Length: 333
Image (tube, rainbow, N blue to C red; front, side, top):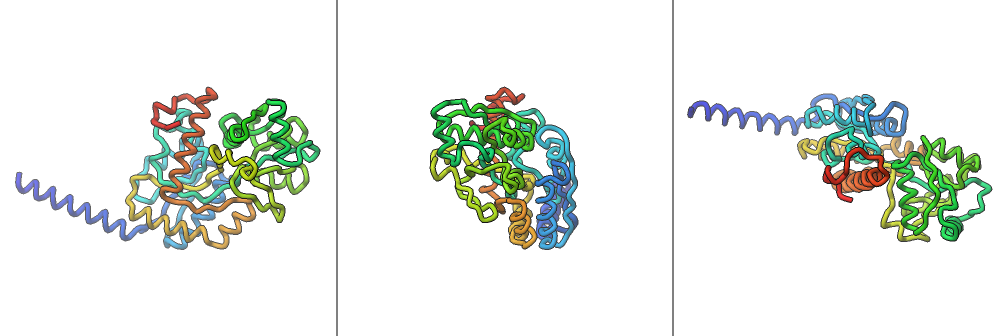
């Protein structure tokens, strides 16, 4: 028995030493990024660009593989989470994955991940060029005078654009007549044809329409003004500071690693990520795609996803669009 215990002790010490050595040598081989959305989208392009820059720092290849399907990117998340927490598997994702749990697609909360946020394109309020509202103040005055009289378009109930509309309503103390659409493109088309009076989508999605004069921006739904090709789009927060209680709810594109991965490995990845975010190609991508580049890691990034998980999940539950009560998952309201 004594010999067995001694052998077990030696084995445990050897394994501990091996794990420690592996962390010191990380990365010793290629890394895989399991990307939960399809090729060609904003999440895909941003991940591929940043991974290429991180690979230069880490000295290994980072292979990006699109694994789509399920609810809220759940197929890709399951594949990524099912692999060892050794730093050789990352999961490319966006803010939309936070609805996977309450929709029955993923049986874990988002707090099983540590997030790296590359950035995202912020939402704004725009109207058709012939709309009577020249400023956001005129819009708010009109809707307060006649509640629910103004038709507002956004993508499907529970989407980030719909949640931004709900948050804007709470911040100004008034309610629009919400008209949901299957996509951002459809809601923008509805605004251009006059089917709705205003639309909320992202700068990236509206960019070409604004340039062509088919939509007229009124206000950003972020705390800061936005420079759109030399034209400043004002922040709605300036006139309505109460919005800070509910906003910003921004697009968050990036990737994640299992939270139980070794801290030493996460530290190396974070350092490589911060270096990659400063690369000229990454900064140019942000400018060309109207992205707000963030480069957030650790608690700051995780806190953002915690907030998104709470807001998205409870909004879907209140709308009757969630299969699982967020309370049973321990998601705070």
